[in-house]
Every structure is written in structure tokens, then in C-alpha cells.
Image (tube, rainbow, N blue to C red; front, side):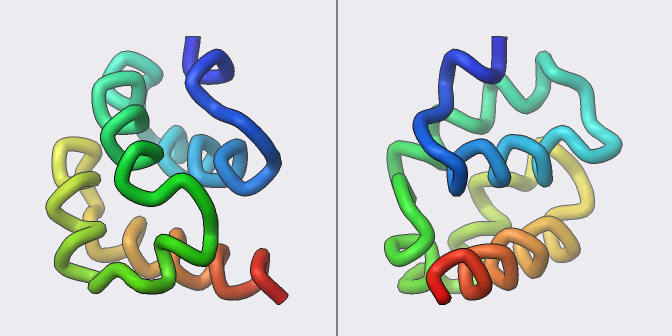
Length: 78
């Protein structure tokens, strides 16, 4: 279950963004690597768009999702 892979509200929001228009099975394959590389909003804000896109590419809509994840992280940090 995707909920078992997350810890805290920021990671929950990452999961929600990933699940938008995407099946749970696909997200379960991508989410652990994403959380391992960027466990919180601040760490994601140091990543490039290209780095984020490489990890989430299997989910589709990588540019849109990368932008949403980055913007959400900016707002979450404030």
C-alpha cells in the first residue's frame, strides 16, 4: 500500500501528486526511490527539474509532475 511508504504530510502530498491519473502499482515502484533521494521539501528544492523528471518518468507527465512537486515543496516550506 502506498500509505505504508510515506512518513509525514510532505511525503503524503508527494504520493497524492504521483497518484493523480496514475495507478497505485506504478507509484509503488517509483515512490521509494523518490523518498530515498528527497525525504523532505528542503532536499527536493536542491534538486534540478531534470533529476526529478528522471525518477518520476515511469509515471508519465514527468515535466508537469516535476513542476507540481517543486511548487508544492516551495509552498510547504513556507
